Length: 68
Image 1 (cartoon, rainbow, N blue to C red):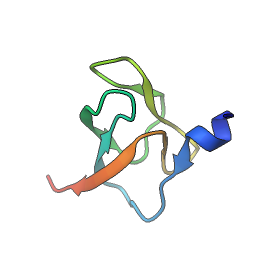
Image 2: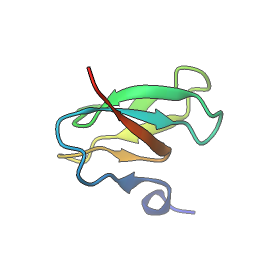
Image 3: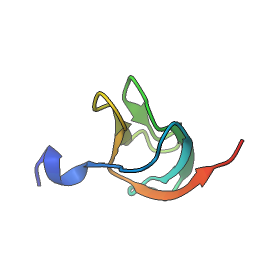
């Protein structure tokens, strides 16, 4: 599997915090939708999100938009 298959760009997230579930260990982590650097899982260290120039691309599952 190549990198294009692993990460998918999220649409319609706006400027929000998102709860992303790590596909490797199941940990749920809150990430900002417009990141500027790679985000790794706090538990297993797998890359769960990477910047794309706009909205992030994730290898995990979007659980919910977080209201602060």
